[in-house]
Length: 105
Image 1: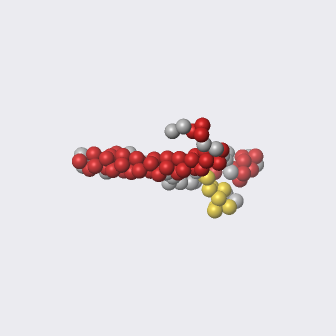
Image 2: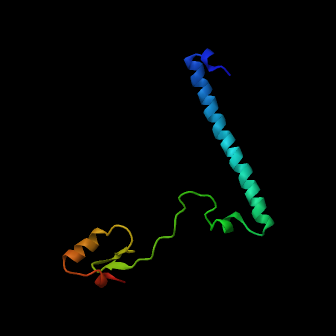
Image 3: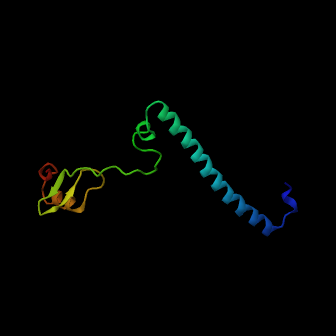
């Protein structure tokens, strides 16, 4: 295909068609490969989820929230798992002389 004979607008339209076709073909290819993987797993007595540890190809799969490990003595509805950034009430309690161990549940 000789692109040098096409005008600017024709090239823009061709690009839009090409982008759409690439997305469609990528999805087709993913479906084809997933089907092959499912067949191979089933032939061995497994599911894809078992082989992939329940992730099964989903990006950003959420983990269950961590259990609370610390509690605000001034407000029992405020807890913290000990992971991530310390909440302000933890900083305030430590600034007022409490220890992190004293805040443990």
